[in-house]
Length: 420
Ligand code: SR1
Ligand code: MG
Image 1: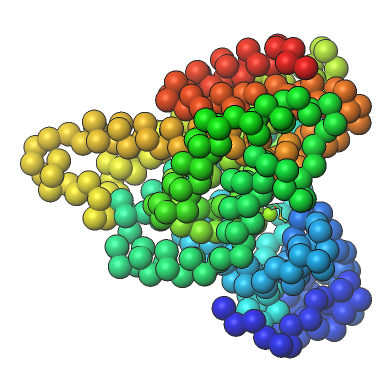
Image 2: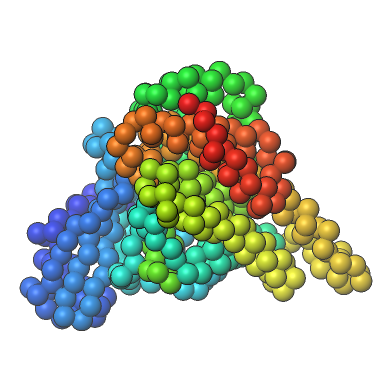
């Protein structure tokens, strides 16, 4: 982590001059920078993203800004998030090969990562709004979550390495602070940067007055802040996933931190549920049922693939300090009950985190396009209300949602309720 005074944000005009001598760019874009075409395409909340194209191909250049792009210079943010993104990407590439873009170059001082240009991939959230499906989506995502969770934990890693790594990622303080505030606190009181659809006021008042709910959320916040179980992606929503109609990659782990295993999967499923609840505003009746069914099938598939892959790794790669084979298999006993209980606790966490993500994307600062692109505020509020009340149910009754089908059945029920 070496933030330099020489840091200077790139622009489409300066990029060729500033990066034209770098071998990784010359190799992947083309030898003559004067022929490169540069386009700034960043539409996320935080960073600059350029596509650089030339005779040999294209790369993505991602550079952190010293502030949150979504808000502006009034919200300074450390450049070191690029360092954590780079470190998270390199670990994810080892733990689940092929799941993340290839890294060509990292410049710590410029907070810049040069990486593979994924094409013709587009952001999954946009696909879900358009009603496009992706082959194998559930298996890629379920396996990614299982492999990164298992292989980054004390179930698998040498514990000295895991402790050193957890200590390293603890340095991602200011980025983690965004999650601590925007996800775990702001939705539940009238925080300054919050906003919500006007018609939702009665539901919002109800949620913010619900002490039991706030206590349950804070209990999950304590799990998030104190349980360094594995290296998380930290911001695994459908805007952090790029797909073609048959290939899926995971991007943007700048919120990487050690935390509870259920966090990534919970966030991911929340974003599928929000896509699901928003569909009546995006689809004509003829396509609505089948597409909503595809989303729910994907959610079930993500959980099932996670479970299957996690159990496979448990049986074949359990080399860390936890649940040693000496206590189970080597003593002639199965560890089946141990993994089943481990996964039950994982599921409880995931369901709770899922409900919180469903709240914060409607009540806090950073909303998502699934609902934001619904122009009619009455329709938006009606659909968001279902999402909010289901989120509350998931947080308060996480124990009852122990199977994927129990979650999708309940989603179907909320989808036909008229809460507003
Ligand atoms: C100011 S950052 C807002 C949100 O964008 C990121 O993608 C994270 O989800 C964060 O909470
Ligand atoms: Mg992001």
